[in-house]
Image: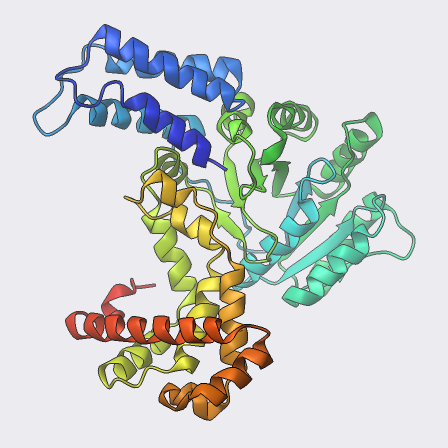
Length: 438
């Protein structure tokens, strides 16, 4: 989402790069351009003005120390103010140590509430919580069915009533949780295409009846300033505890993400950037600020890798590389682990130092699907010993995978090149040393 914003800010900062010192003119010229970039990105007008005023105040009169250029100094100032704008520090959701924790999820229809409920359930289950999903969206057609399907996918219990009643569903779910040793209830409430009195009265009643530990407002980051306006209305009604930004993998301008925390005064707690049930991240203001300024996000990249790559498997892989035994079964495992980390485009955006052109390139994730199809068309013997793949075998593999012989030959060539590279790498350093302690 922030690729275009990042590129434009980087272009604006070129005005002071290479200059000997910061002065009123070059600061003014740079910040005027950045202000225009923020407004073009649909950042709230008052938020943009206050942000530029604070950066200007801190930049004026700053002496450029020997180790920094003017561009580096003003980038640092902008980074610090972006972090403040986005919330300064990461904010945890409140989970009770004993008893039942009720988490109420609210927002407009189409914002991704139901999917988020499943994602949060999966995340908390991974933290040794026992979650119950409550289907209190009784108006949207198939909303209950959707939650039940998601519950089956993540192996989570879904509570619903035969006679649909949102208020009763919420209270009965809490009662059911207490009787069946669930420690967390996630309540999926109804949304509307717009804010109306009936909707607001209902979520206010549910809040008063169950007294939730946490109320999370889910907002579609692609809706721009409308997202900020709906957040204000919901906050006035239920005084929510935190914000969840969904669809950050979209191509919107990103203004809502930069504006909403400042306007509403509530922290962003989670961000979601995909439809998969594991596409949910805790929100860290400094990490997003770094990505906006084109500096990548190595910490999040490493955390994703830790979740996807098993330490024991990494050690086994290292041993196979040292013995030159790396085969297509190992290759297939690496592909599946990479796919768990998210889209290739999102991973490129986290790598610092890449040019904007590379970061913004449209990487086709279907290429990995083609590779998997080719490998899956091989016999176990062929995967373990690629040297036996003669012309006849390659032709059969191409036909079985729905690809061409050229595709198979290309993969074999890439595999051999990668095998040589990884063997050299294994000889210089340990894969085990690359994984951080959990």
